[in-house]
Amino acid sequence: MNKKISIKKIAELSGVSVATVSRVINNNGRFSEETRKKVLKVIRENNYQTNNVAKSLRMHKSYTVGILVPDITNPFFSNTVQIIEKNLFEKGYSTIICNTARSRDKELEYVKILESKIVDGLIVISGFKTFDRKNLPDDLPVICIDRSPADSTIAFVGSDHYEGAVMATEFLLAETENLAIVKHDEQSSSGSERVRGFEETLFKEKVEKFGSLIVSNGSQNDQQKQIKKFLQDEMNGSKQPLGVFALSDTLAANILLVAHDLSIKVPKQLKIMGFDDSPIASYCSPQLTTIRQNEILLAKEASGKLIKLMNGENLARDEIVKKIPVQLIVRGTT
Image 1: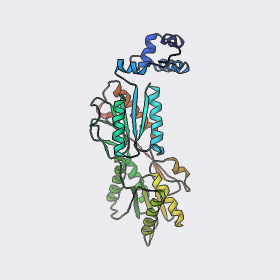
Image 2 (image 1 turned 180 degrees about the vertical axis):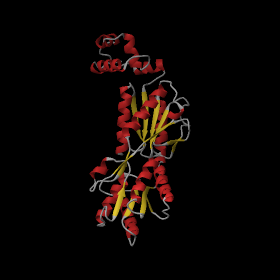
Image 3 (image 1 turned 30 degrees about the vertical axis):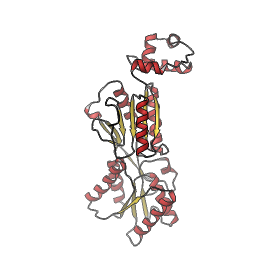
């Protein structure tokens, strides 16, 4: 155990009682936000470290949260994770971040590892269509972000992907009735909602025909070959412009690159809509029109609900499912 100063000294430097310092360290009992920040500041400045193993056994808490993320290189996921980590750290929790690389086997292994680490809670971000907690203890708090839980009692926080797709489709329909959708070959629950929003909007507007491309996993070069053939087929003799709804900004950027190679004029001949408003949307030329997700609010809602559950509180019925509004960002590709 490494303690440069005693808890008594921490209390003295903070101007509070030893009991208050203990409550802040263990994150229970009553104390003001100002007091918590003051005590944590003194703790950080003096490199004070509690014996976490002993505290975990005594309190039946590890003050550690596991985060399952499908692709840490994805800007949306990495930004969300960073905000969650910051929110939890400020409340005295450390995080174990597990990048599953969209592998079911890897995800299951990480779940086993996190259970053995006796984490106090788990946040599951996107990934496959549903998350099943059958391999986890019944009393472990779990929050799903942008991934439908198999158990309806698990709290869910997610962007309103369906509404975002409706907004995107209606915007494109105002420009042209010649529409197409480009999607990944394996859909997450959020991706499925985007597809549903697109298709149901076209059905509502009585648009019976639309193009569709499922881009298989592979290298960027392979994906661009698929997109090239698709654009050539769709635009050959068809009424222009063609409006394409891509289920991610990465797909939209690839479509834009292929359009440049084919000398297709964007947005005159081809209008492109992305989803996420990731950094690549602003780096493209022209910049991508897209649907923006509110990562800050998503992270705040998820971490707040998890902390509440880890403190033994129950969520109200209307807190179990939280949909976060999205925003249409119009730029140069439409």
